[in-house]
Image (tube, rainbow, N blue to C red; front, side, top):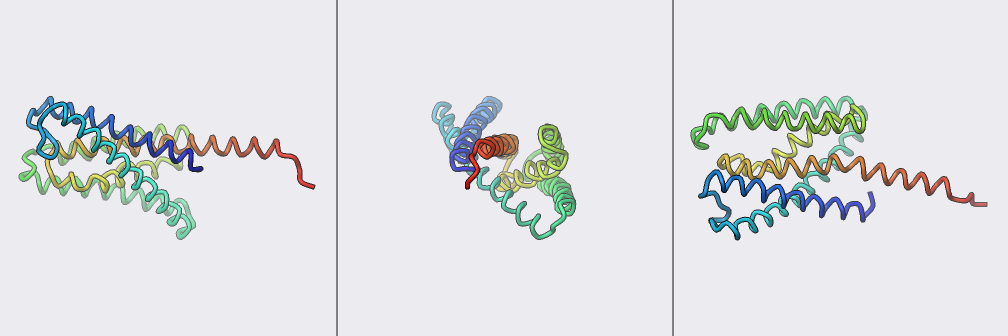
Length: 210
């Protein structure tokens, strides 16, 4: 991936984070008029703050995404067998879903609800499954588990701080983070495919060197 494509992915991911955060934050504020960020309740200013926070979410998501790509490269180099790495990712994904469900159940009194501990894992699983299915259809079946791992494990790690807060904070952070991660993973193969196509065309048109 060249610098121009990375630059496009970086800014477009931040834009996705800003837009999704504004939409989710507005809905949260409509449901609960007391919902605000940094103690600010004024609708106009609060919307601006939500967009700015969403831009930060997008940048943070980029860090997590490229950290995962680095981890993926190192793991494949060490394990040598792709199916071993996929099995480890599948186990970690299931463990993360069960772990976050247990943690939220254990903190249900503090959080003030009795449903988020099962709604969040199931919703995250369903959304991740849908994105992973489309990703596998557009690329190959081996992309299914890595995509699930990214959308579940990496998203939960990125939004970990919100999991120890309230339902509104979880919703406001997890949805934009998930959207940014899904956007990046769905764009990655398109960017790489264009680069490979351009490279192949250049090679076929190149004159042999004497």
